[in-house]
Length: 253
Image (cartoon, rainbow, N blue to C red; front, side, top):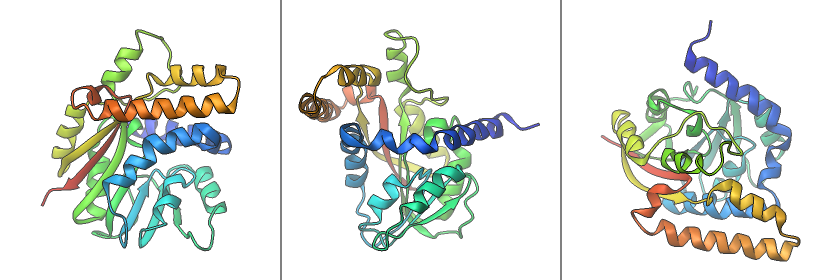
């Protein structure tokens, strides 16, 4: 019988194998531009990737891995879903080569002190206890290594459940910034900074988006949402209530 943690990992693997063929649609068109502005823009601003070795943990179909490969010395993308990795491999271009591997993020088969940066977008949403992941991330990071990851905010999701009982996506793990800071410290990391993305909440954005009748209206609606997000995230108290937290941490020596 599998342990609770192993069972949860297996559920995630099965779900993403089933979802793999349509996963990229979420990041195409104006909707894709929305996610790019709210996630990619701020992940890339935290760290100078030029000349660095980067691990993209939970790479999916390689969206971030390919972006990082523009400046990094090398990028390795790993994911537990074989189907997602196969799609990522099918996208490889000669000028943007990335190594893609099927791996469980808790057991990365790469030597110690190899990477300068680990990026993990959309993985810690499924992790209730960070420690098994943080131990492995710390092992493969060089001294003073950098970690950037996303996590869904328990405060935000608690607020939205009073507005709508069922959210569009289900995330089994939710954390506050204080909990994240505590788990990072236990795992040998220190929190450097964090940024919030606001979906106001998410289902409202996409319900309005789908109602709008033209790409013109949708384009300016997304621009307005992104602009409001930037304003809110600059206010220290308010950014604690963002739907998604983008966390930047470093190893502690």
